[in-house]
Amino acid sequence: MSENPFEIIPLNNDDAPEFWDITRLPQIKKDIAKATHSELNGENDINNLLQLFSNYLDISKRVNSFNTRRNYLSNSKQFLHWCNLLNYSIERVKTTQDLRNLIIVYNKALLQSDIQQNTVALKMQSIRKFFEFVNFKELKLDLRSAFNPDWITTQDTNAFKKQVRINEDVYKEVCDYVNDECGIDDKWILFFFAFGCRRSEISTAKISDIDKLNKCINLYMVKTQDIKKLPLPDWYNSVSDFEENQIFIVTNNSKRTKKTKGIKPVTTQHIYNICQKWLDNISFKGDIKLTPHSFRRYFINTMQKKGYSDSSISKISGHKSVQMISRYAFDTDLSNNPIVSGDAVDY
Image (cartoon, rainbow, N blue to C red; front, side, top):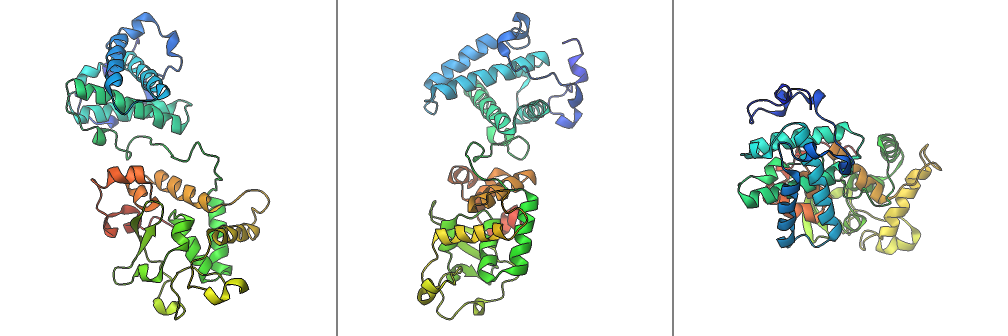
């Protein structure tokens, strides 16, 4: 590139990304097949590095898919090509802070392009794998810290599923309708939806799960068989709010279930039907679809936009794969989860 790279990159590797001239970063080249010989043999010998990386993937027990391997190599080639345009040798990366700064800036470069957010996240996963190889070769970098979701793009795990989405306007209308027009059962369902709970968790939530002393609900997650803690809603008073023989928090007021109301759990279909009732009573009726999972998606996406880490979100959403990792970094104590302690959720 014609510009002096040191007008873009700080001379000191440990300088934070704020000291980089982000406005003049080289563009991400999408079609690497068109890269010139000089671009592939600049500060980084890309072909040689990719061959060594490929050899590492051969012995990696966690890479069994041909497509995954191909994506790792392709995305790493794209990254190294960008580094060459920047005149940045990866040999400059000696510490976790060096890597963190480079990754943050590359993430910004990806976001400045027209690449979709979840594609950016997949590319970042590939770069993490590449630096796992670099670690294996010679360094001892803290990859978890360098690729922390607090400062790089992470994947929406439901992005590639055909799930119904809602936006802030729909969510607000539902909240207004439930709070102004509906009874206590609807308010409880909305409360659980607001925290991304599954229908199976809502239907089996028991009054005995309520801990008034610690102002929380110890909710059992049927799918993961774990317990998660949610704050008590501010409109909850005491167990006297429930019927004398009631066991489950959410009840069904239909004539068919009158004898077992609160004694047997409501069906997940009943919770789905309540969701449809809400849609029938807001201005978006006929224009959108609404499902219980819509609220789960809304919770996760909203918390990501607010900047909460995936590990904090997973404590409440119950995504097992992320949660298993986050247990080493986050206490399960209710007060230590920023989503709960920061009153992040509206319902």
